[in-house]
Each structure stands twice: as C-alpha cells, then as structure tokens.
View 1 (cartoon, chains in turn blue, green):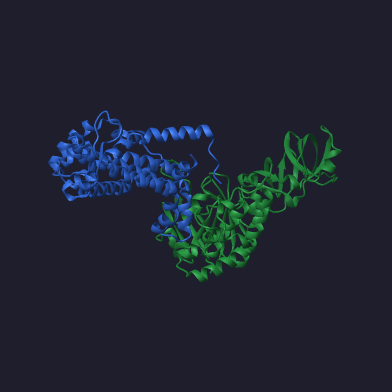
View 2 (cartoon, rainbow over the protein chains, first blue to last red; view 1 turned 90 degrees about the vertical axis):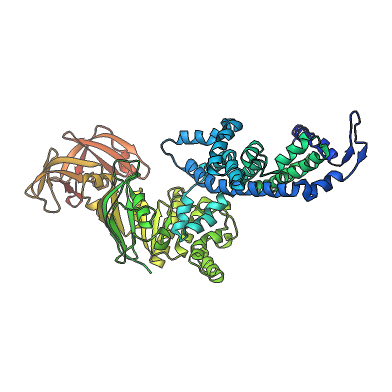
Length: 270
Length: 347
C-alpha cells in the first residue's frame, strides 16, 4: 500500500541519515581500538578491552545504566500523571488565564537551564533533596513536563469528549470510559509524549550533576568523565550503550504511531 | 421494562451564561410512549436530556423514574441511553463490539452478548457488517449501528438528541420509521429531541414544545395545529395569520368583518389566527365568515403555492394548489371563506 518515495526525496533522506550517523562511526571504531593516532585513518591495533571494562562493575557503567533508566522511567511516569490532565484541560477547555498558563508551561524551555538549576539547587538543599534519586527525578520533570503537556494538549484539541458521555450513558464507569474510549484515542500521542519525556530525562547532564551532587551518577555523567579523561575507547563504548534505548524506543513508537514500522520502512526504501 | 418519567421543576444554568438554559421545567412521560421535546436550537432541550441522563446536575427540582428519584445516581447507573446527532461509534472497536458495548458494561457473558447483538443487527439491517470498523460504514449505517447499540442494552429510557439531523432527507424518513417500529416493538419509553416540527409530528405520541428554557405547550401533535395556546406556538407550527380585534358575544370583530367562532371565548381583546392551508378560495354569499381579498403576490413552493393576500389593510397568507394559483393574477379580487372550525382566538 505504501507509495514509493520519489528519487530526489530518497537521495535527500539518505544524505540526512549519513549526516546523522557520521559522528557515530568514529565512536564505534574507537570502542574497539587499542591505539589510534593521527594521521592513521584506521586504528593500528584492535581490542575488546574497552567493552569488557564497560561491562565490569568497576567501571560504574552497569549501575549508571540502571540509574539512568530508573530516573528516566520515573520522570516519564510522573510527567504522564501530571501532563495528561493538564494537557486535557488545555486542549478541551477555555478558561481565564489560559494563555499565561501556556506561557508558564513553556518557560523551562525558554529560561537557560543552568540559571534555573542554580536557583533550584538552593531550594533543593533546604528540602534535603540534593544527592537523592527523588531529587534528580523531580528536577528532570522541569524540562520534561512542557513536552508532555504540549503533546497531550494537541492530542486533546482534536478529541471529541462526547464519546465519553456516550460511553457513560451506555453504562461505563469512569475507569471503563478511560480504558475503552479515552486511552485508545490518545495512545499514539501519549506514546509520543512519553518518548520525548524519556529522552529528555535520559540526556540530562547539568541538572543531574547539580542536584545529584556526584552521588547520583547517570550515563551522561560517566560519559563526560571518561571523555574529559581522554579515554576515547571507553567513551566510544559507553556512547554506543547510551544511544541504544533511544533507537529502540523510536522504532517501537514508529510502529505504534503509524500502524507500521515507518522508520524501518523508509530505510528499506532507500 | 418501560418506566414512566417525571420531571418536576428542574433548572439549569451554564457557568458562563447569565440566563438559565432551563428554568423550572416540569414534564411527565408515560411508560412506553414516544414523546418529542421540540424547540428551536438553543432553547435548552439538549440540556434537559443531559440532566435526565445524569451528565448535568439540575440546580433545582427532581427527576423520578417510576416514582424514584434518580438524581443521586451517576449516569452509568441510570440505564438511560443517550443517542446523539453524531453516531459516536467507538472507532477502535468493530461494529459488533460497538453494539455490544452496553451489554459488556453490564457484565453479560460473551456468548449471550453475541447472540443478542446478532439479533439486534438483523433488526437494523446490518447483518453482514459486524466485523467492520465504523469508519467503513455509510452515515446512515453508522446511525443504525448507534441506534442498535442504544436499544440492545434494554435501557429504561431512550434519550435521542436530534439523532437523524445529519442524514439526508430520504434516509431521515427511513430512520424515523425504523425508530418508530423498534420503539413500538420494545416499548421503551423514549424522549426524542428535535427542532423539526414535521419530524416531531410524524413520530410522536406526545409533543412537548420548549422555548427559551420553558415548556410552552404539551399535548398530542394535532393540538399544536388546531389549538395552539399562544401566538408563539401557532407561529412555530407554521400559522402565518394573525388578525387583531376583539371577541364579543361569541363572534370575533375585526377590520375584516364579524366572524363566527367554533367555541365560546370570553369577551375582550384578542387575536384571530387561522392556518394558511385552511383558507378557502370560495364564494359563500351571506356567510359572515366570507369576504373578498386582493392578491398581492404568489409564491410557487412545489406541491403548493402560497398566496399573499390583503383585505381592509389586513395582510394574510393562504395555500392553494399550483393548478388553482395559475389562473390568479396579481391584483385580482379573490373570494375568501374562513371555515369557523379552523378559527382560533388567542388572548
């Protein structure tokens, strides 16, 4: 059923993919090299050293991976709980101060992260949230919530709540209405929002560093440590691991969002 | 399984509006009857329906089914199924799943549900379409599926909110007779909201006319034609003619003459109304209800022609057949007879 992409568009897509993938190639090569010095085009010696180090507990990578995943999943779940009703209110209803509310939701994307984080640090110190997992999860909500809320608002803008009234009059309770009517209608948008939120949290560096105070070490923090220590091989290996969940989630979401595996389909066509 | 419905003095005001949408409205529906709640758009009729369904909470008054107040019940416990202008089929379920939704919510086991759904689908002539998704159905089929979904759950009360107004004229008539047939078969007490007086008249046992949040007149359909209680009612039902004057000793005195009346009205000022289709273009010498009028203009309307007439500075309208109207020229003097039976005085 899929119409074939025209040739110029296919070329353009191929270029785009090269542009996006190119920076990853040296990282992949680094992760498997023992020595790679200028002006050699390829490493002079290969080894699995970096990989076995990365998977050992000494490196802190397995723990960092677990912490990153836990924080990102918690932040996603919490922003769903907040962003879904907020987005519904914004998408379905008109109320006083709606424009101001929308601006405030966008504020975290406008205000520079560091400025906000420094102020937050003071507050979190007083609350005893610094250096805790909970503190990091909460601070991740700040950049993540705008995405979730705005995605849900646009989903609900095109949603007809009369279907819910219809279901209620047919005997469905609140939970059943959500389960059978609301959820199926908003699922694609909900997955998009969750994907954004997860990736925003997954890639947080400054906020984690500041609020985590070095006690909560996520993958980006580890990555930065090894990169600044000049361990290109280990940096390369961690980068590969770091990219993985994003890529997997995108492929899964693509299937859900369009009813087929769109990303994979496009690749095949090129 | 049918119940009677008693609404007493319910009011509702939307938060963003000053005037109440419904004000102290009382209405009772007899078990098994089909009643139309008729009124122009914005008169509050849909609000009444939503209050009965439990989707809105009345600010005052009570709603009782078989004598028991249902105000404390949430919508899903009232067993009053609503059907809207849009079919509102759930797009992620098949047609059969849609129709069976209410039964599923009632907790009926799958096998029994499937039998009931299949029966209902053949009643609404959707036999082979159960496995399709709603988007694959035509507008009329969707509305039939929505009707089936409403009826199969055996509601105590069926509430219809202009369910056919999105359909084209032929389909609308088909759907009306289907509804009438199924309603008589199931004897579910039904309240049908519509702005279309023709639809209300052809469909219902009783009509309740609503204007600006108030119930204006309630009764059998023909009463609204023969015995409108006010100028508003008469106008809503297409009576175009109102002549000022006064009642004196059983006759109506006006610039047009002194008319005999079909019944006794108290003396005093009033307005004479008669329907344009009851005006006879006929010479009745000596009869007080006859006079001569001049034709101002005529308008061909298809099955009939509307004549715009004037006599003694009183303008009025009459319907006649296009055949009769062909021979009438503008400015011509035309004999008019108003049969006493068709006259009504509004105070």
